[in-house]
Length: 439
Image (tube, rainbow, N blue to C red):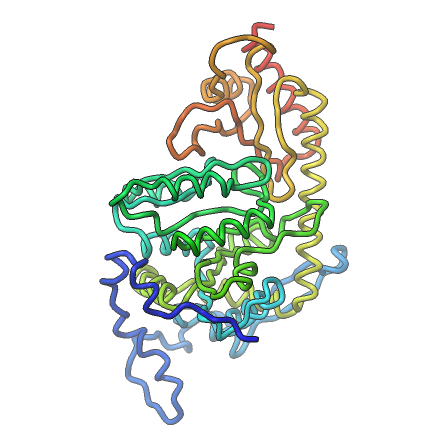
């Protein structure tokens, strides 16, 4: 049974004035015509490939099934020529096709459901462009609290009004979201966008339960907002329970699809420096994102796309799955080491919920003795002062709060440290907390 997608005109009310004013690049908009049989193109100022010094590239990669062995892949001929030349704004067709197949395998989403896919220079790139395409200056936006600090500058650049939705150990709180929307001031337009990181949330490490995701999707339909599903840690899930389905997948249970804009990244699983991410969105919105790319950077670098495709194509989807499972197990072991030393040195001095995905611990420092009165202590002065002086660099929780308020929480990344460094860092934090308590 085919899914019913929302009509194109539905999205007119969601596009920002900036997006509506965008016009297609007069040259890139004609690129597809070059492929017509018999067409002689005098169109683009493409440099002649005969002047490029590259003749082939060879990449060596670890096997996903046996990391002790290496495989060699050569990129030459047509594949290399495609990567070296100006290419389609949305991305190289070969890599786009591979990602389409991936989304069908992982999320059950197929072409022809009113959405398409574009590649960006990392998911941060397309998230930034999506925000500008959907929000006008000063408009309200629903965001999780705590909030991924990396998107805050984009929202702030358009003076967006943050409408914070609390989270807990099970993820975003639909009850709070419902209360906010049902008690929205009369005469004030409701938010049209919710931004969320559903797996291994940054900074909290929390993975939103499937039940809550369904509730949020129902609220999106009831109150007419779009969901920006930022999911860089999807493949870094290592929880004991089965992986919750994505918003992109779950919306197939609704009467119509088209309220989820999904962002994926290969930064955490292939290479952060390769800068490859992709967005799946309703076509009217993605057209505006592509128009932004066409005038800002023309395209995501073709050479990195070619390298990514050569690797993924050599692995196949089964090899990719094997690799991502190994990556998630790697971070699970890192998480376990970090928590072991948290229990050993910070038990009674901090509180936390163990993350089930991602690479962050979010913990509350207990800077007062049990039973001591007064307000909770803020972590910022301690983390930026005594902790830094003792050689521990972490982030105070306030940088992740939409309102910039005080909080006793701290974010720590466990992705890079070896066991000795983890133990030493946590022992130093213990000393700092004890000093703050006057012990």
